[in-house]
Image (cartoon, rainbow, N blue to C red; front, side, top):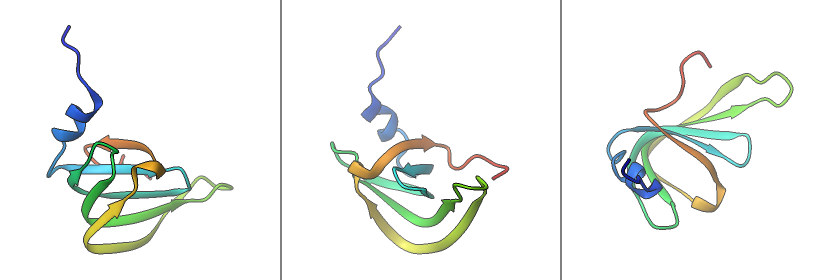
Length: 87
């Protein structure tokens, strides 16, 4: 089986929807525009979400129009394909 590197997966996700979960309770969805070797990412037309620690319910915080830079140091998980439905 061929070895697939993490940065290759992210590279194939350029111009596709992503769901980014940060170390805090914040999450972002949007279109991945770019990234670097430190997985600092730029997403476009992002929606910011927060999850309540007591109820576990996600709530939309705000929509960011244009481009947004997220530091790779704060990213726990980057999910290609966008946010799961039902939350």
